[in-house]
Length: 98
Image (spheres, one colour):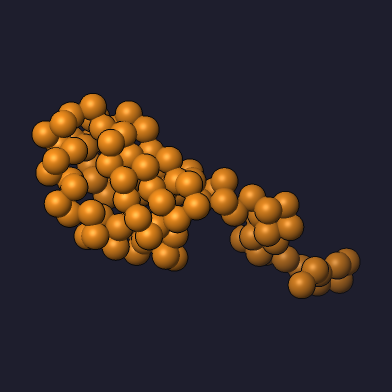
């Protein structure tokens, strides 16, 4: 689906085409997951978050608070659902909190 000379691309289409052509989707997804984690879980959780990493369909989150880790472990399914809704696609299937 490449457009040439006479047709006009809007900037969104051009960026999407560039991302697909250069296989940058996975990298962007990793950035979006980190942003979504901070946005959805708020500053309280974000302050204790030391690492957020997406590998394949598993999200690894490292926290500096054992109490918070325990609390969040009870709501893993809900967190996965919220993050996937925010991202607009089912990227995360498993959440591991360390």
